[in-house]
Length: 247
Length: 257
Image (cartoon, rainbow over all chains, first blue to last red; front, top):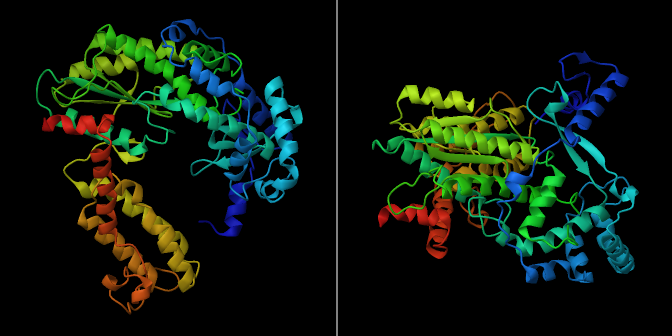
């Protein structure tokens, strides 16, 4: 933990290095650096999906789709809202989950109707979509934009919709995930994978048989979450058999 | 909808990688590892962005892996940073072959110091060296706070909800050696009785054995780390008993027949 004065110093961005490593310390320049960093990050790259997409098996069938595309129920929204933490940071509109939970009896039907309308028309009002982005320092020293982890603070309503969809998705999650991937599924546990890894590596180390020549390769996927090609994802989901409506 | 939940969607994304590896395996281009003859073969482990791939050490398979990764990168737009990836060979692989494979993959070799999911992926002879990092982490926490003149109650909260939870994740998988547990308890004890900065030890008014007792019985209710460790491991045992179909379970039971 840092003393208050020190903390302030860490939180203040005094300079940024741009992609060629030049230090920029005036405000205008720093803005430019940040903007171009995010632009290159989210730029759509030209990619070839076909070889990967074609071999994915179809695992989602009609009854699952019926589950996914069933009309939304009011209680789904209520569950999602009340599962949010009370004083999570509010988005641009400044209302936090505690506000909505307190006045749920007043605003529930309005929220429900409005959200359903958005979901059915596949259109979000652009204002709802806008987010505050907070930068969290990564590592001991912050030099370039890479050393900050961006966190998006969305509006509560936006999170609510996302949560409802995620809860629906969870129901069929177990079908989508092979046992080699243990994350984010209730019955799978993080330690499972770790234990397998430890056991296998241990085996590699102690085994003296000549035919046990093996290699373990640990990969580092940089910026795993923010760098997904949406088009690729769409094709994967189609191939897996999700209804187009749901995508 | 595609903007809503990147984490869930990421799993779908990694599905592609998984499918590619499976296909290569089915056609016999790749061979995973099985720890003994009945054990399930393991070729890849994915946990969010942490990937572990296993294959046989020869040139052909390395080439196949490289091609797979390349195809996946092209398709998904995700970048795999090669200098940061690590490779580890089993002990019987001769060093010229090692060099050839590292060259093909363009990665660096580690001697088993790497961590997977925050756990040491290899436990050597010296358990103390492997788990020493826990001690350091607690020491850092204590040091950064000890200069701040915390009150008795502050220190209680600090111990109960911060310090004693640092090793809990690792305790879920490993039985920590007594030496490490002792050292941790000593540090916590000194922090509890000491006052002010500079790690002054202060007078220990009560033996450490009496502190983990429940408050109703005149203790402080701290955790007894050794028992906590055993309890956490017991949970793993329970999972093996109840869920005998999981991959871990099959892997661990295989050598026992």
